[in-house]
Length: 195
Image 1 (cartoon, rainbow, N blue to C red):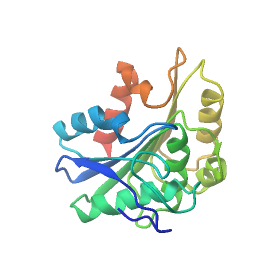
Image 2: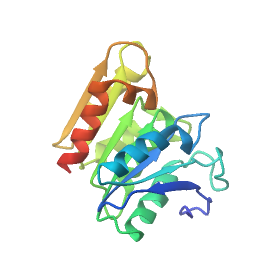
Image 3: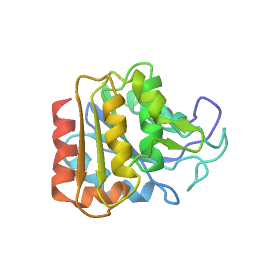
């Protein structure tokens, strides 16, 4: 995939559903972080693409901090491959990027999920972007994973979306690891079913 600023974005796509899901990893990881969940989504009738964010895995180029553009490139790819709705799911740094991307996306995405996304990461400011967010949004975090929980609550308060929620779980799991909690995974899957 090619991002708007020329970055080459690598990803692995699976499934054939009309609802597409972009899965973006946390710092120091790559698309493999989300492949098990991508296959699970495919088995549930979704089209999913797990991507390498620029500077990680096989993705290269572009402005280093504009991770939001990688999610937008993946959303474009899912639409080209047949998705009529696209949801962005980002872990940690990519949670921040998913919020920024969702606020910018044209056409609009159907929803966004932030898993431990900080209010700011690098040059991305989710606290500012979320004030423009009108689509359904979910913020997930762990209580003992600072600053994830306070940031999730702050971002939820700032979001003008009518369909928004924050869920904070006991423990210190971070990013995509939250999907290992049955209640957290059920929340995300329930969110997808509603869109």
